[in-house]
Image 1 (cartoon, one colour):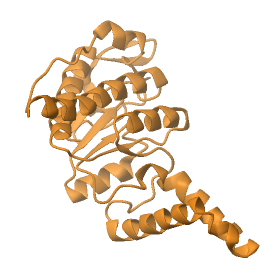
Image 2 (cartoon, rainbow, N blue to C red):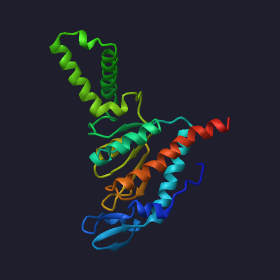
Image 3 (cartoon, rainbow, N blue to C red):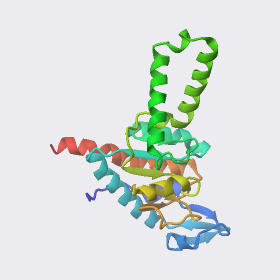
Image 4 (tube, rainbow, N blue to C red):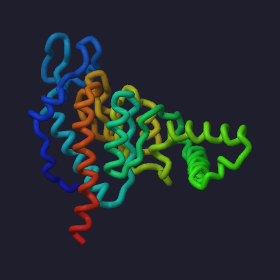
Length: 236
């Protein structure tokens, strides 16, 4: 795996509140190696460990990006939805930032069928064919299209299972993580002090509640993903 310098700055992480964990009563003992101290009833995450695992994750996605691998970013917290969508679009990744539909990956044949229907409906809307249907049929299909856009809009062009899945909140997205484990899809997880660090392939200890923290982690990963193809082009 290529090792590069990703300008991961401890001061920048502190300003973003990456080091603030959950309350000491809501913690997973397996996170002990990633916690440096307690402050006013809150666990403080060891940012040196965060920097190390974030750097490892950046190296992984850089190498994968340089080989044309496909990424899926998942995070369904309302306050982080826009940041996840922007980060994914910037890196040309697929994303799910609303509700995860169980079996989305493990039952890929069904998901693929629904996505095909979704793309067909989008095409029919673009050429205004839906408007030429009877009002009742048109309204029903437009409602279906709106529903599909809400839940599957970020993966509408995903033609197969992703090569790497980035998960913003392990607790909220446990179903996603479990599907990846079943399928053997490598995962990168942002984990807070109430999570299990042993489930993902790379776990990045960080505050998963603060938007600034989520945005900082995503920005580093997205930059590395974008650099991958650029590096391949420069070296050919």
